[in-house]
Image (cartoon, rainbow, N blue to C red):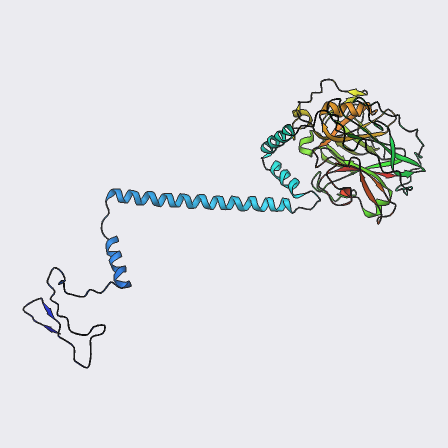
Length: 450
């Protein structure tokens, strides 16, 4: 290449014959002026270094004020979105961990039940209540009709249960069979209101009888179960769930110990969650929640007998009291449903599902001889539940838990842990008959042979 010092033109000479120009077959003379490139020049594209240098040069140019404001606004928006994303991710992580712990918590409750309970415990109970009210309102019990399988029959009494604890101060007695109940719906079905012995024999006689009624004269395809238990032959004990009341350790924990299964005769569900019960909880010498005067209370004495009454009026704290489970107010008093019961008063009788709908409900009471009476079934409101309890002979009674996931009553057959088997009061009870033989989240009452 030659450079003429008198001009800015550059003349490119052909290369030597033995050194051909890479990528070409001949010489190309190009004259470059001070302002550009001659049209005949071959222009090679920028390489990575040249492109980076060009971009830096462009960035170095001054921006207009509008462009600067737009750039700052975009920066602020990106930072805001990033912050929101971090907060959302953190919240989702916390929720996920909490929900995961709830779904995998010990206890035999189904995952769907655990999920609903988790929602209630995290401020979403109103949404759950609205959905449940819609469900039960949209699926109200059928008007008229007959039970598909008629009045149920029960499992006959099984061989005698071995006594769990001997109590010399109150020997067993042989009570008369309870009197049959007058059916509510008409005409009566065969066997309706007739007591049937079941469970295990104690001291040679049945300790439990069951019967069935249609709970009102309108929804005649529904069946409510009623159980009658003799406290002279049975000893009651309050068992403490993993969550209700929680805590522990307890002598009577979240399930019936295998060593006690042989003498187990019957068991049924407890009350509402403590935060919804508007009452207290006392057992094994510990006050889990303060007792409330006037509240409906299931009281278990040291000898295993049971009373149901208004705390402070019918029962008080004495050395004989070992367990007290309060739940709302009395619904039967003096042998009659209490005045002022309203089917749609969900603020008093179960905000969980709403009082104006027919749902699964349960209740427990005592008759004038101290026998224990349990009532449970679908399609009940607070007035029909109280009516069935009173018709069954209860002089005082309270509502227990509601909703199909929680209402349970079982009798048991078998005299060894290997052959003990539970039997549902009503076949449509949702939970399996071995529910109380495994850890559960809720409290319950078990009855054993004396």
